[in-house]
Length: 254
Ligand SMILES: Nc1ncnc2c1ncn2[C@@H]1O[C@H](COP(=O)(O)OP(=O)(O)OP(=O)(O)O)[C@@H](O)[C@H]1O
Image 1 (cartoon, rainbow, N blue to C red):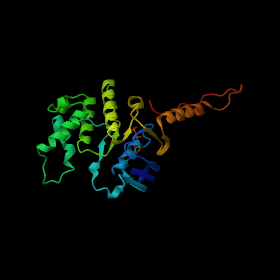
Image 2: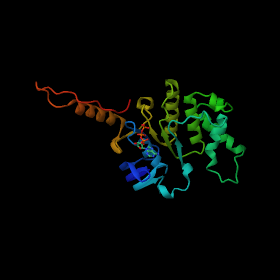
Image 3: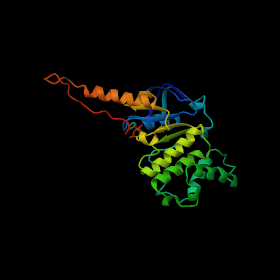
Image 4: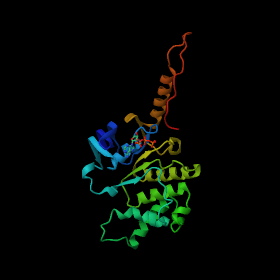
């Protein structure tokens, strides 16, 4: 995945600009940054779901506009649960992940069950296949959505806050799922506020602030970057006695 001077936004108005980024195959990248900084807009840009306004974007070696087989890139959207809609079983929801990869004249047959059950097994929910999704917890529903994204066997998986709003146990299960996917060579771009939940899974961190990339490097380097920011923020104007006052806090990963 390569972005050069890319800008994304909505209705012609840029939200993120000057993005230079390349993600290697098999890499697991966490996208961090304050609320409203443009993380979702950036990752939606990789899927053609926000407007690509300028610069170059290529995904899996193909310019985004010419990427025909969109099932090669899977997506787990933000703040999405499965309650309140049409009643469906867990298996049925996962099967919908295969619909876009088939022409309309080839309906899903029994052969679709094997990948769907395998995807549910990956997220640890094989025993819930016949359950109504509404009976699952929020964390389990997030895992169903990951299974739905996995069933078409995407080469790249983009996830927007997969661990948000789920309890610690579900967070740990989700982190394990991401670790296994990473080990299997799936390229992942994961927007998160909970870096600690993904420790050991993430190879690289990209920070977005006010629509710009403000960090791109290793998790270890990010800790140094944050410490430097905190030091800079603490170095306020000199107090009358010559000491420095603290002027502010920095945001960042929790
Ligand atoms: N569909 C849209 N149309 C117009 N503007 C939008 C749309 N979606 C988001 N924005 C604007 O883009 C800016 C960045 O939003 P975005 O959702 O990308 O931030 P974020 O970093 O993902 O935030 P959060 O951490 O809260 O999810 C915000 O000012 C938001 O209002």
